[in-house]
Image (cartoon, rainbow, N blue to C red; front, side):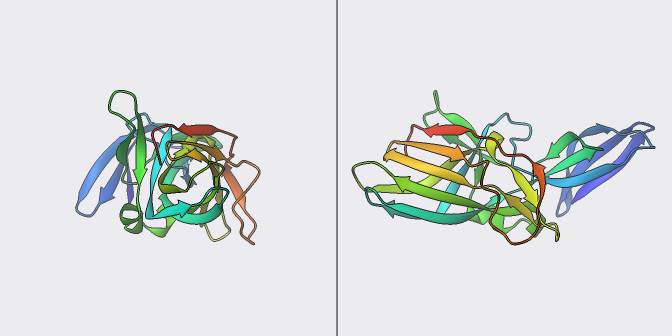
Length: 210
């Protein structure tokens, strides 16, 4: 739950309430004659600078050479605060973090797993579609996917259901794969959608294993 308290004629304090405690999220410049609107937003790092979301799969996926697979995994959705059409802040939904790769060279990522996402409210989670192609010469085991969040887009349904765009995982070997966002593939639903955050084509290289 988000709590907004006006602290001056042009500033509002934003806090997130989790059970019996609150976490301060920042001050928003908001004159009394303006209003904020809330919309879903792809997951961000919050106070920690991250460009990727490390998604741990509920179960390991084994794919033989030349094989393909498609799966859906739940991921967290954050809340974007808009003043008119301008995004002024993004409030993360209980962010957790994980290091992908070695401690000296790896990438710090926002972390997502089934246990974390299941406890979130429906408006704070979405399904991420992942298509996997193994173009390597041996069978591979996939236990996680590192998604470049700056490339994923966000849509919203008429019932205010957040819908995130899909990604493609192109596996070369057990230690090397490419994760590509898919800007031309909006969520496959029958409802009319409103685009909140436009997707763009971004590729992240998983060079420390699957």
